[in-house]
Image 1 (cartoon, rainbow, N blue to C red):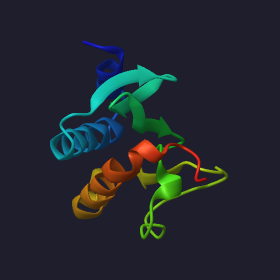
Image 2: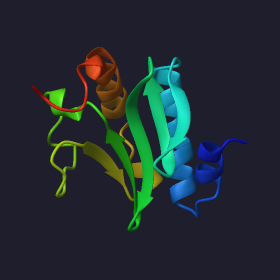
Image 3: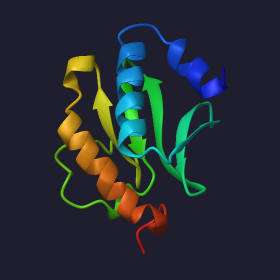
Image 4: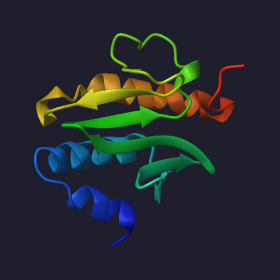
Length: 120
């Protein structure tokens, strides 16, 4: 088992269920993503570029998006909280995952991920 999978399976409930649910949706939506373990969290890469990460922090799961500076139309769903560029979807319980919104965001990010971290 790789460190990213150990991270996910080693978390207590409800975080493990949230992480597993997100992992299934992410990998089903964009199968070419590669799951790695970077900066002590599971990180997905697309064509060698960072795409998104999963992080358990302070009682919630953050699904952070690398190229979110270029993402348009989803601000009401995304959290920035003291971060200049990264935006994330935040989940406290598995039933909070809106699969339709998540899939839409993932597909949009796939189109723009090559633009990178900063909006220029």
